[in-house]
Length: 374
Ligand SMILES: [Zn+2]
Image (tube, rainbow, N blue to C red; front, side, top):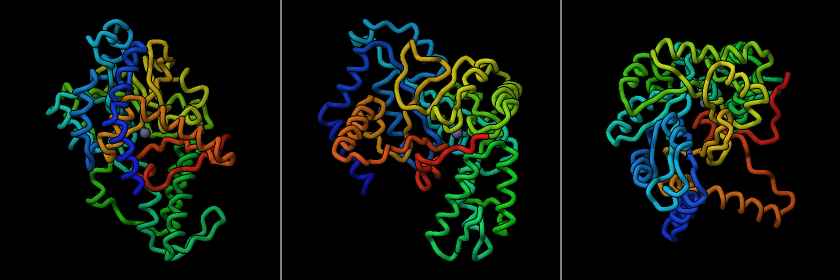
């Protein structure tokens, strides 16, 4: 129901000319760079979205787009001689980025940039944000006490609550080791022994062979996304923060035999990045770093705090068009202001941008959850 309403709103924006107005207005304001943030590539309508974006934007690899942002002249945009540069970025390195995304990028000649966490590529294990739901689904016990709370696993609501509690703990772990120990303890507690199933295949990390194959595809470029995808602001040890950022670049450069210049912060909101991370990223030798804070970039945007617009392949292309034009963001912010005026106790919109689509769709983290700061 909600998705139909969102499509209807997007269609109104498109057919009323608002989206076109948004694109024009962005050009009139001067050079801007739009960076879209995807995760999965398959099981949606990426083809239609790419066709639309290719027609109305100058879709480039991140490196080329940032160069274009610095050299683009206001007059070129105003006179319609140039289009706003746009980047399609994919975080996490899901296997369908290879089986579908890269093939589509080549077919439609649309560049994509994929941000990789080498630790997951090495292990081939499920991403941590996919674990909660799988662990609960595969549990061999009828009840469990986790963090002093009893969960009855024969009740749907309690299963959901347990999966959410597991995700929360994994999300805000103060080290990768703590996260992995917690995961192991939950596996033992729930008596989970089920291996990864065939149905999960496309939701698992890419392999080095697949990445190597994509590196020969001129329409695919790569960036770094830490070794093991921790939330950087939660890491208690600065040494681990530096390792996660720096080692990632070293491993990717050794494997791909090409410079890795861009970094994407895991989860990517300001509260997940923390104060130290941009300096650590710069010290590690990266030239640019991407957040998931909503917005467009100008030549004056901090290169270590570049903004992105979160989209998904399961969104209708009209909605992606509205988001890329900036109109969606404007109306979202206006909508919240109106709601706050009419309803003083209205909750704030959830600022958390989940790392994976599973978490995004099924277990959003409430805004009032505090990281386990140590
Ligand atoms: Zn991520």
